[in-house]
Length: 111
Length: 117
Image (cartoon, rainbow over all chains, first blue to last red; front, side, top):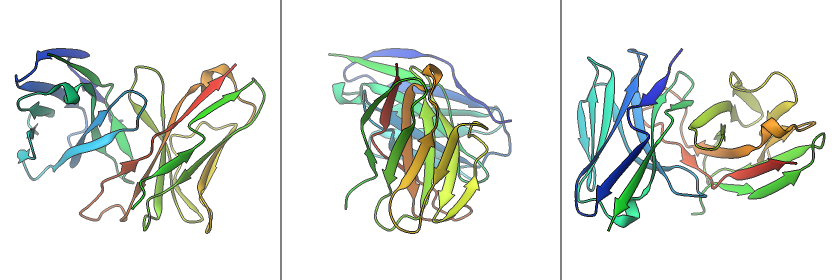
């Protein structure tokens, strides 16, 4: 079955620096990928998504890169701010639209 | 437009009791998903429902757990005879369109944190 994992459980960055959070997935047939942000005590919040027919997609201060050859997904956050501190999850869309989540990376932004 | 609503936000039960978790999807959404999150872990899919139909329950434990999404009212996740291992955060998400469409975004509620004593 599908599995999704993250390379780093925690990431500490200085305010203003760029952050990169990585994710690996196992099913080469996966075609929908999403990044969520989860703050303490809250539900996941959609950040950005990408489909397998793309390798890059940009939002406001965020960029998602997809490398299907090595089944790797990354989230880049530009000019990281204290409000970006949270746990970030990658997720893969399954056949019935269920989401398969990775274990999460805690992003800690140092002022 | 209110987001996904879940209640209660916190629920405490003793072993053997029943837990009922409610989820009201966003207005206009007819697809509901339930996920469970253990501390410091990612969310695990449990069940996907449409109005009056269970579409995918591949993540539901075989016993004690059930879910419904009636024609009227919220979706209910029911856990009978709770055990300590059921302690977790349970999240509901809703989606506006069917799988296979070009837009699959799921909107999550704030979750119900279940504690079993």
